[in-house]
Structures are given as C-alpha cells and as structure tokens.
Length: 261
Length: 261
Image 1 (spheres, rainbow over the protein chains, first blue to last red):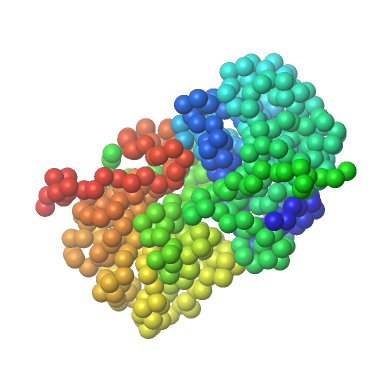
Image 2 (cartoon, rainbow over the protein chains, first blue to last red):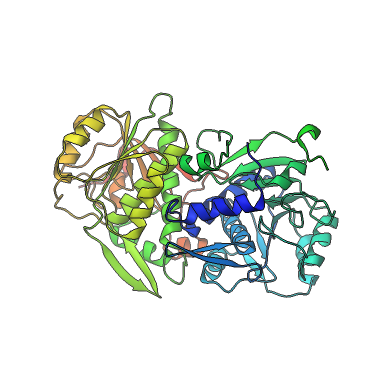
C-alpha cells in the first residue's frame, strides 16, 4: 500500500473531482464522513461512549479553489471540517449524542447546509468563538473526541484558537479518533514537533498519508470510492475492504516500517 | 411504521431537499444507492451471484422540476435511475461484476457524471436502444437483477421499451431486487394489474410505500438519512436500524396486514 505525500493526496482529490473522476464534493464527503462515523462506532460503542465531541477545523483558512472543467474544486481544511459535520450527522443517526465544536466555521453554502442537517438531528453546534471555555466544558461531558480539525493540506503554524485547542484535547484523557491525520502532525513527517494530537484511532481517507507511518493505535482506511482507473494511475495498491463495508482495519504499524529519521 | 402514498413520499423528498432539510440530491442518492447495493449483497453473495444486471429507468420521462429556495429539486424516474447507477458503482467496489441496462438515459449532468463514475470502475453500460436483444443477452449472463426502473412517482402506462422489458425480466428466472417499489406496480395499490415485476427482494427507501404491503419476500428499509425533525413531522415511526448499518430488514408481511380489496 502506498503512503501519500500531501501533494499526491491533493492530486488524487483533484482527479476524483475532475471531469475524469466526475465525483461531486457532496458525494465524496458523504462517503468519507460515513466511514469516519462507522470507524468511531466500531471502536467506541454507544452504550459506553455516546457523547462524542466532534471538532471541526477552520472554514476560511487555507481554502484552495480551482476551476476544473467547470466544477469548483474545494479542498483543504474546509473539507476536513465538512467530513466532521457529515460524521456528526451519521453518529446522531446511529444513536450517539454528538455535539459539534467548530470555532471558525466557513461561509460556503455547503457548510451551512451540513450544519443545518446536523441541527435537524438535534445536534448542538457550539457558537463560534476564540474563547476556549466552551470547549473545556463540552470536553468534560464527552466520552470520545472526533478530530476533524486539520487534514492533509495542513501547514504550520497552528493559528488561534487551534493552538490552544490541541493541548486541551491532549490533556483531557478522552480518547481521540482522528480523521486522515492527527491534527497538528506534519502530514509527511508525523508528529515531529510533538505538538500534534495523541490520537487513539486514525481513519485514513483514500490512502494513508506519509506521516501516518508514525501512528500507533487502531488504524482504519475509509473512502471506498477510488475507482480502479485512478487507483492504478496513482499505484495506490489499496487493501481489500471486507464484503460491503466502508472501512477496513489496517495492520498495526510495527517499528520496522516507521519513519527512520 | 407508516406506509406512504406517492404524494407523501414526494412531500418528504421535497422537504429533505428544501432549505429546511438542506440535503443535496447527490447526498441522498449516494446513501440510497449504497443501501441498495448493501441489501443486494446481503442476500446474494458475490461468490455465487457476482453478475448483476442493473436496470435503470427512463431519464427524460416524468421529470419533475421545482425551484425550492434556489435549489433544483429533481425527483421522479430520473432519481430512481440515479440510485441504480450509484448502486452499480458500489457493487463494483464490493467486487461484483455489474453491467448497466439503461435504454433511455437522461441528459442531465448528474446522470452523465454517475455514468462516468461507473465507467471508471470498468462497468459496461449497454448502449441506449429500443431493441430488446441486448437486454435478453445480458440477462442470460446475469445472476441477479437490480430493478431501478420505476420509483414512487411511476404512473401508467408503461412506455416502450419498458413495456417489453418487464415481461422479459419476469420470465428469465433470475432473482430480482427492486428499489423502492417493484417496477410496474401501482405505488399505492400494489401489483393490481399483474404486469409488475415479481421481485424477490425489495429495498424501500425512506419509508415503504402503500403498495409494498402486498410484497412477499425479503424486505429491507434503506435511506438512513431522515432527520428526527422530518420523521416526526410526517409521523414515519421508522424502525431502528442495527448499530451503524445503512439497511434494516423488515418483518415479512403476513396476510393480515396486506391490502384488502
């Protein structure tokens, strides 16, 4: 299986949403968010971990637009936050009691729609603010965190309020499920600066990123939407998903295939 | 659980895609098609039934457009065919070998995109034609049929070539999985004219339609996307889905709750 650089991950997303791949962002985000919700639900059952704090990244930073064949391609932290909102909705459907922490929501319609969908499920969205108090309070009433803060397009520095958010999440003693890469990690070099989340579960989307080689914990792959043609073009060599599931658990990393610095 | 009239089913779809529900057609179709693929895969395993003939309805008949809060609402047989294309793609992902029969494809972009997504999976789409020969040949090489021809907005008469398609499917001796309502059935009165498909499996979407009370066979519910607010408004009283699954098997119908004519 190929571990992706940020650049290759970006190229695959572009290809999926180009005229070649023909996917809409809505489709990919729906399947990615569903996979994240299923991964969390596989590890943390709702009878013991029903209270899920879904943390979503900034909606107006790092936004990358490109017009590809008349389709607007939207990637970056925005997409990561969208995955979190979709996952929150599915978790609500599964009978969990998620609440959403999204201190810097995006202004794009797709975010507003995803928020409305959550609200229709009775999911509380903590009002946007740089004040960390509401986060601390929500965290004290949570059984597990879903980290959809930064994705594969993350570049340091970590801006406020997220520079304060990550240490709070790390110190809370609440298990963390990260989407695509633990937030604060270098996408390719792992948690080299030590400021990233100490996640218990990782849900890599499409294919794991280089930095995920350093992850020790329960590791799932999700995003069962890469067509053969694109998987072959990028030599992804993806593992087989079981029957009709949307996630596959990857083997635990041994030291042998971790990064050698 | 409430069985829906065509009118109520239409109203629920409108509500889901209105400013209130805030869903896009892409999202709903993705989840509905995934549920159909999972239902088929639950009953017909790929080691014995890998060759799936996915039959999609007309793309330019019965099309209903409405502008609701700046969103285009698209329902009718078109949507049904879209569910079929999404299901075909997921079946390909699951390791089945689907082929698509869609004699009257729609011209809308969403159909072209869904077709391209299938083609990228190496799925053959039989060229559009009124000639039934290619259907007969494909059927002789199929282990199971996914019927996404007519949905809840179907109204007789059955137009060509589908008037010829239904008897061919009924006489082939190949098991049939129908989406939402067996094609040719009256959505509310069941197979009252006797011209509809004799389906083995039914995947009701959102909630079963009135006509499904007459269905005898394996019956699933899919479309796990109806938020509490809309389920309550329409008094759907939906059954509980198991853990994080996208389908739930409904109890077999007994004669007692079948239609009394």
